[in-house]
Image 1: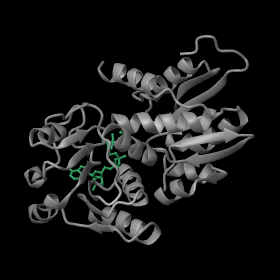
Image 2 (image 1 turned 45 degrees about the horizontal axis):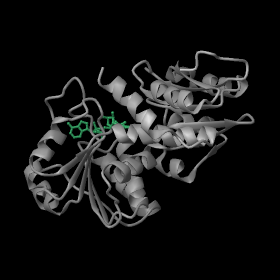
Image 3 (image 1 turned 60 degrees about the vertical axis):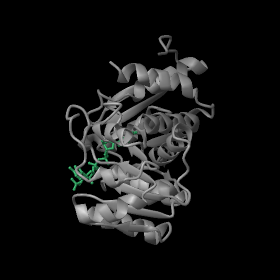
Image 4 (image 1 turned 180 degrees about the vertical axis):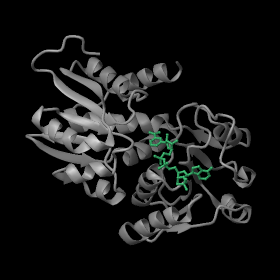
Length: 289
Ligand code: NAP
């Protein structure tokens, strides 16, 4: 961390509620320290009712950029001057660049997931059949990104079917006709799993402290050639990933997504290549505590 804050130090931070469990301060301060940039990154606990005033504050206090987390990722769009087409499509912003009083919103979660897939699992979604469990904010970002990256088919299922349909319609109408919904049932999984190349869990099932749970579906029908991704990073090996490895599948947790969404934000803010290895080590250190 930059302990020598000066009048010229650029301030970055994260808006969320709650925010005290965020790993982003560690991620970004390790990168600022490594690169020697005169910058600091701090947590901003912002209640939903205070978001509008906070956005004015970002402009008026000259804050250089912020990350945005739950529950503000969608609502914050109302207060921006500009938004990228990808973030608009996904309907969520997790990174804001502030320049000359103007705020521009980006979504780096989606390309962060793609980078982790390519860098950590050496897998490209192009021409792959992708199955997504869950239909919340993360599923929306990941599904849109998989469609943009050329997946041949995207199959989505979750508890609430309307949410699934909303993502399927978004992809088919605004990206490419490649998404399909299916009902969460043994019969459906039995038909779909044997053909699946990449399975992505975007539900929170298995997250700390309920580490002995996993999404209830017949994993045994998934072939050993498939890659299983869990967006959860605490614990680093969820029960789903453990069981997947046991039946011969490659497995990837959500740490890479967290790392790369931060790395992409770092570069947007500073124009400097992110020190990936340093950021990864910093994350690993806090995640093992
Ligand atoms: P969210 O908006 O609450 O969505 C969760 C989705 O999972 C909802 O569609 C929910 O369905 C579904 N779900 C929950 N329990 C289920 C169950 N037992 N069976 C089937 N579906 C179930 O949350 P989110 O923001 O998308 O985040 C989801 C997960 O991704 C969390 O674990 C989060 O930590 C992780 N994440 C990781 C990263 C990263 O950088 N690695 C980034 C973002 C999110 P209903 O709506 O019907 O309840």
